[in-house]
Length: 165
Image 1 (cartoon, rainbow, N blue to C red):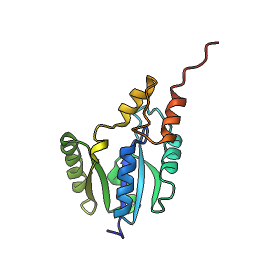
Image 2: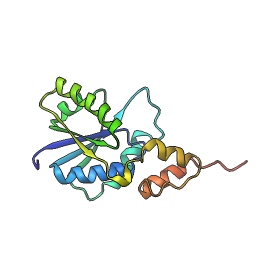
Image 3: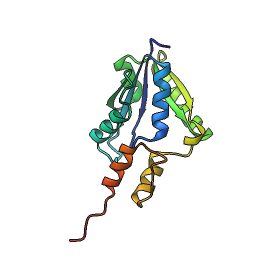
């Protein structure tokens, strides 16, 4: 599959070690991997699109076949637009599979030339989610076991308590 363009999409709010693991593994399988940050008007992310893009660029530094982009609307339309042949999805638990399979079937119905490849999350990352990391960090907890240093620093800055006047 070394001539295949793949897309790994998500909100990456913030990027986690689980995300990084999937990016690394996908970059070894596919010729090029686009990390596509989804913009959803109904969601209020903690980090701006620019902040998430910068963190992902830092985390993937040295991965020459990985690039960062963003999209609005349906992922399958974005994949059609950029000429991707594969959507990479990570699976943490059986419940993820049911949800992801439903989406994969809908995507295949809309664009049968684009396949979905599921990569199981490594055992040590199965419980990690961006929402869990945000929750722990919002209460001053240490998230260094769950996210890269640049993300930990960004979370500390976001949740820093302003000094009393």
